[in-house]
Length: 127
Image (tube, rainbow, N blue to C red; front, side):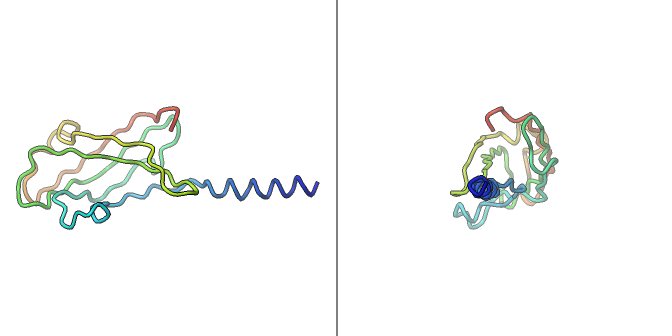
């Protein structure tokens, strides 16, 4: 009985280390060494906050042109990470054409912003 209790306690600690974190939307320009980004994303949120197996997700964001020139084309590289006990693990990396995906974003004048919604289909079985 003592051995079973000890094994159960270890299992609880191990399972606790693999917790599900809430979504953390953040601007990574500083991390990437970009001192004055031309494009920023504001008011980023998602519904649901964390997408689950078989579920879909809508991501709301405002794209802001901080640069001195009109933007005629805009691509975005999106990454999603999972926090594992040994550090962050990227499980999705997608390159998107924001102008094609969101008509009305381009051209985007200096100082202008555009609010968009991205609809994500259900997650793949492996995610």
